[in-house]
Image 1 (tube, rainbow, N blue to C red):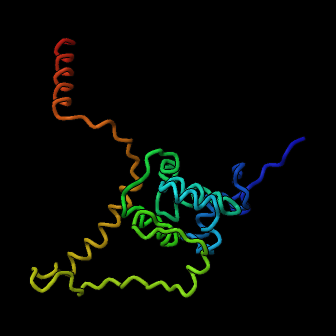
Image 2: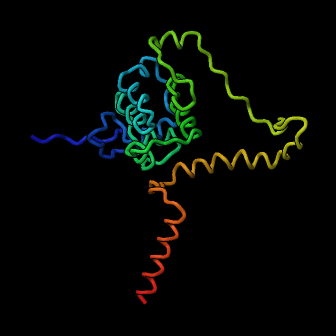
Image 3: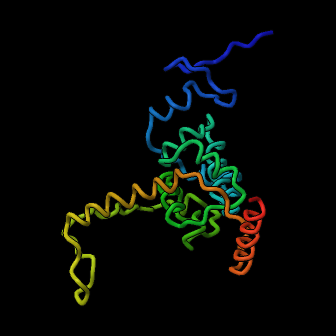
Length: 211
């Protein structure tokens, strides 16, 4: 008995076996550039809570994707996080959790993760009734950037000109995205300076002997 292959209803691309939706990852990502705001009940699911208790953002990514119906493809999650699909896959598979606070904060903001689940900023806590937590909760929007805003106290040098501030405001986010996308290998064991010097000496001896 043969099973008909499922195709994306938009571009007619063959769908992956684990894709239960009607769109491929690329078309799904194109249809929405931002993660949806999920209800409190979603964040109270056992699989989601276990992922956050692990304090590993890779496990959070995987649980977040698989807890939705249909499962969110890695390519779609990558668009929401402004990463590549390969980088999302690497973070999910890595045994060493990400510890950069700015990245964790930015990724959780992109997925609208509730504040009480963010273990890295000191506000995570046990919540027995998620509905009570969300009752009457308001979110203050971030203040808009103004080139005339005062950035330093009165006893400090005057702030930079508006043109220089504009360059910094644009350049820093781009640099962060570049570092996120860059696939860096895991660091090896830390060695002391004498050990490094001995290794260099041995390699130099091998080079001389090879001549």
